[in-house]
Image 1 (tube, each protein chain N blue to C red):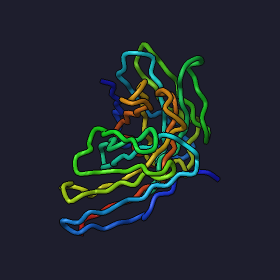
Image 2: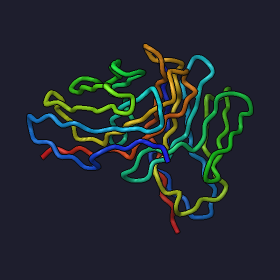
Image 3: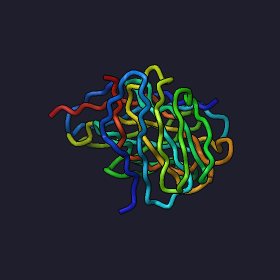
Length: 115
Length: 117
């Protein structure tokens, strides 16, 4: 079955360290998204990508970076500039550029914690 | 800018009782509305969506939602709750387009549902 795979499920970061969260999809979707989830705040958009080699900042991009070298993959790097990285990170995708009527498909998330 | 309000942070119901989770949105045009469910430590699963047409939409797991334009609401309902329905529920509204294309979802802050046996 097609879906989105996020790894690892749990990740720990030391102070001053960059860490990369993996997101892979086999749905043949063009658009991919990264969200951050904090208790009581819902989901907030970090970055999104519509096509390979193109991505845009979301609402809370500071301290994060992404790449989109392959259609299937959209890794997120949490840099040392992100001062409060402890959160649950969710990757999502939609079929194509489309309009707002496309439901997003989500992975099972990565929980990042600070050591 | 669009926004979504879920006024109930926590709701507790008894198994077998009916359920209604509230969602109010702010959006200028006809909204694209979604309900998602999240089990602990998991991603979000789509329950149902509304784009146009019949204002009462049916979803998976016996859920339904009604779009009321006059009240800017999209409340989620279930006639009889099962213990396995305990989870967090998110309402979301879809924006027409993001810069460069694609769609953006604005999420509410979620409602945590507890089911008492």
